[in-house]
Structure formats: C-alpha cells, structure tokens
Length: 192
Image 1 (cartoon, one colour):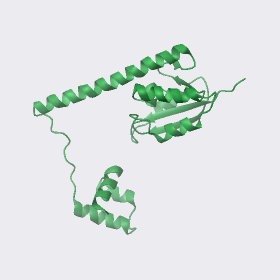
Image 2 (image 1 turned 30 degrees about the horizontal axis):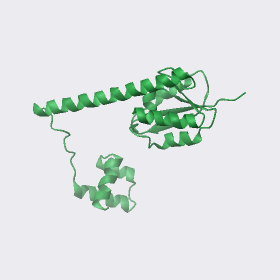
Image 3 (image 1 turned 90 degrees about the vertical axis):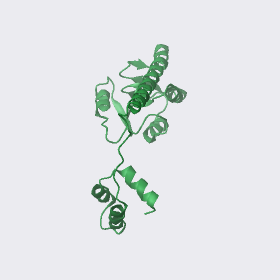
Image 4 (image 1 turned 180 degrees about the horizontal axis):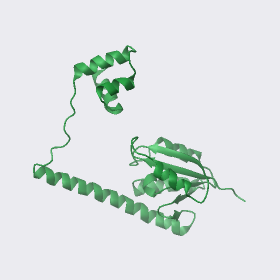
C-alpha cells in the first residue's frame, strides 16, 4: 500500500505577520504533517523561496496541505499552474478552509471555482481602494503618505560607525529608527 506523506505550506504577506493560525490548522488536521514550509512574502507571484523548495521536495503520493487557497496563490493562473505542477508529480492538494481535495474530480473542479472567486475578491478590493483614494483626492482629503524625515548628515555619521565596526547594522538601523529595506536602499543610493 502506498504511504502518503503530508506536507504543510503556510504563507504570510510580511515578516511582521504571524503564521500561527495556519500552523494550528495543520495541528487540527486528521493526519500528521511531516514537514511545513513557511513563506513570509506576498503571494502575488510564484517567486517565493519556500514555495519553490516545497515544490522541489514533494514526490509522487505526497499530499500538500494549506489552511486556505489564498495562502498558496493570489491569482487563478498561479493557483492552476501550481496545482498542475503538483499533479504532474503525482501530488495532491488539500485546502482545509474550503474542504477541497484535488484527488477527486469534484475537488479539482471546486479548486478552479474557488481560485477564480479569490482572484475576483482581491481585484474588487483593489478597485474599491483605488476608487476611494480617487474620491478622497478629489475632495482634498487625501494627499498620499507623509514624507519620512531624513537627515543625510546624521545617516552618514551613523553609517560610519557601522562601517568602522563600532556598531552592528541592526544597531545602526535602531539608532536611525529605520526598517531594514529603507536602510539598505539609502545605503545603496548614497554609495556608502
């Protein structure tokens, strides 16, 4: 008899978000999840390190488990491509929230429907957001983000301490009250 290995895949959009809800859903699943892959990045495309690692790892007979489809993909095209890649390897997919199992014809059909609905929902939210911003701009209530203050002299002084080894990059970011992405972008722009 073929032994099934269950592999979990979880994704949150940013490093600040917590994947715990998804992990708990795996703990409540009727089968033991052998391995869990977690991405902390947007699902807008398939270029995610842990998704790629999971797709490389799975083999025939395995089952990939997700808490819900939106964690795996944000567009119908990406969802169907991922499912096709899994299917080509003989791997099935289970979504806990939607109660869908692609090992059945009904599950494959429902997957397509849910993926299309998820994409529609996302596009509708983005459209409403754009319309709301346009209306607020028209009424003079929206001016975009407030510019973040920046003192180049202070930035360079703190970076000098970092480059000389007096403090770590993390300490420098804290002293400048900057997030990692912004810090390194400015370092690159200023050629430090």
